[in-house]
Length: 284
Image (cartoon, rainbow, N blue to C red; front, side, top):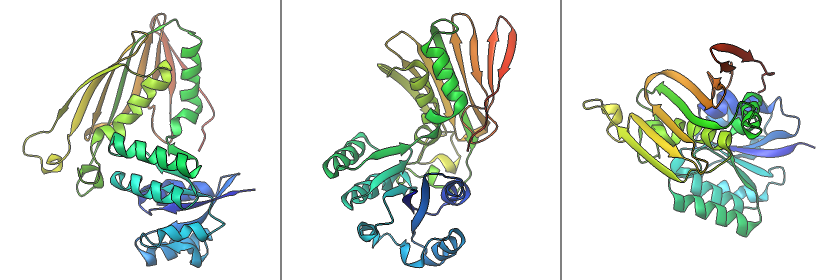
């Protein structure tokens, strides 16, 4: 049996990645759409075989409660809308899969968790790399100390963002840390298997660049973990595409470059200058 999902928000992520992927899913299918643009939603619904009466807008979103073909709501909205539509979704009796970052404040996150608990519904954040084979291989190596204890971790995630873009809006919860910096932060967490106990960081916005009037252009940070591992990360909205991490262990360095992209990931180990590539089957 395939579980029915309502996809909320028809931006590029939904159109280019999420909806096409449903056609490959063994256990899930798209059964409803929520959009503020009826004509656009009607075209998408026709293409993917979603019934015309299963198209909703943001005003009648709560009517999803009456659709038995929708068991899960997948929220693909600007960050500042995640909390509201998650809370309304679980109150409508549906499980919720919410895009990252979870929300823009700790208070919003806690309210989302509380609402899901009260409604006895599942709440999950759509962070895919915990399930990607190469990242999982790194996790396994580090758990078993295949190359000795971890000493330090370095990670970078950068890209160029041009206006107009919701990532450049403070009101919409934009900025590089919540959008792409969390890939490095989460990698540091699942590689060590620990939660950081201390964090320091710096943000920078170049003078005269109107793109960064509301959000930083770049952020650099250091996380300290209970085992003593120091992890250093950078994220940037005005640099070249770069998505990597390096795990410096006692006996070797584990490298992923790229580490966070949808496709084309590469995993290496470097032991005393001898570099080896480790291949895994690519998954969607």
